[in-house]
Image 1 (cartoon, helix red, strand yellow):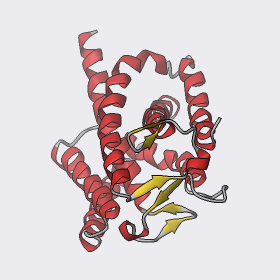
Image 2: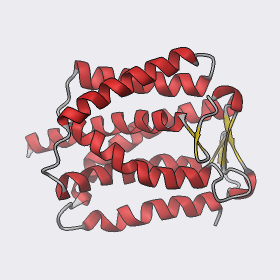
Image 3: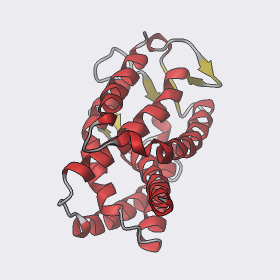
Length: 230
């Protein structure tokens, strides 16, 4: 199995096995989860493919199985099913095991901070495609869902995002070359700021936020609809 394949397998094994935990019973949400994964996954794969074609990022063949769809290796396609699954799993685990955690006040400042930072970086580095697209998208999503729609679950999302940063640093660290001679996923230096967290481009924080926020939004909407019907 390829290096990237092992990363995918390690990422999904724990969340999938623990989906049948009696307290979380995550498997009961799969009907709401599947369309959420597909909606966000397809959108981000289109983005991924476009940027790969433009050479904004790419993949080192020696760490891959060699199976591609377009410019994307099969492992990258699996990434957009496995990682979102793991993130929503974390979201539900935190709500089940830490129901008394209240981050509403912190989440308000977090939303302001993330929106401001996203717009600032997006404007300053407008010519950097990855920086601009990831940061501006994350800001616009926050404005739309938190400040306009005023979704009630945003504080839970912030809790999820902060906890998910830990596995995010591990997985993205492996993919960007923290433990390999060359990165599994490389980035065109002309389209990023150059600031990195270990080997991880700073922009990945905005990218992951922009992926996770609409994912949770669709999931919570569909889950709420399921409760109303039942």
